Length: 403
Image (tube, rainbow, N blue to C red; front, top):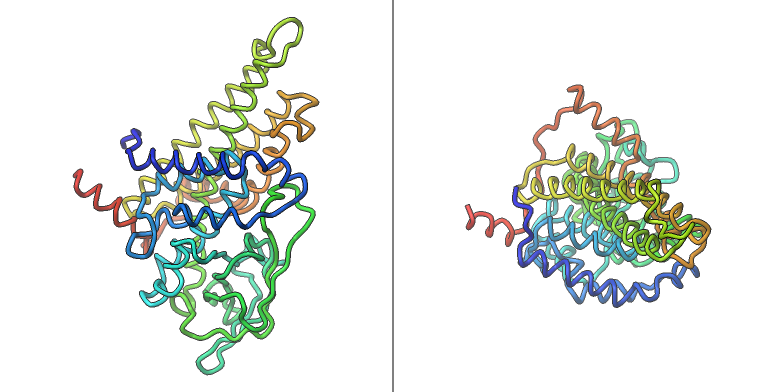
């Protein structure tokens, strides 16, 4: 495995870093404090091609590889988590899922405008009473001629109030549990489809998090993604992509904590010297370095498998678990290093701590990932062949040329 970044990957990293530092960094403290949401940021991301980075050029994307996607996620979350969430939901959970499972006609209808940044998309699996237990979702889909009628509620949906397209999961038969799930693409403006905001969040306060209500929504049968009963497979493959972006973003949060803490260690004096001279402070700095480097290696390992079109559920799960735990620990230590100042928004580390907590829950809780890793090690869980995501055309061709 070659850890040297290509010129294209460096170009993506630098472009995304410059965008985030210019368009968001100067304002994020105020946006977060007021709980303000600024969707115009996503339009600018679309214009720069960030919303279609790993999508093949023939579908309106940039054709960049998964290392490039990881670098973009890292740079976005180094400024604020709400930026990376957009990539996780719009790209990881929705667009890459369409690329993997949708028909050519469906890709032209939904994937192309999403990759171009003309339309924003989200993913709706979680419900008020169903999170980790995805097979227990209660949203019903009832066949009615050439339509399916959807009734149900979705909760904790990122971009709920902003998205144009919704990848929604429902059940044809609750008794069938995960075997009865099916996926549909819905569009804003459909009769019976309404959305709302969730207020009072601990973190990601500059982001759009909300709920979706479906009351008698008539969805054309042609909007079904995959086949009846394939919904669970589609959802799990989507979550593999989402987890990858969350893990990559967590690396950016760790780096932000480390950079803020190093700066403060040189500025703050105690007992006649910089606080960075104290060994217990150095211990926390060293742990951040370990967390960043370890997490990044795991993310790059998963990215390499994705670039080769190899199923990577185990590797991505490990990267997500390790990186998100490391980010939470780094943010907690960063607050400790800043002392009383870390308890106020005068410094960014209190925001980092609040934002880091969510990722330990969403895209598979810490406990879910522990179980996954244990079951793989014990041989209780074995990956069976599954339609794997095709690597971006440009990256695949470059690898073939090098070989």
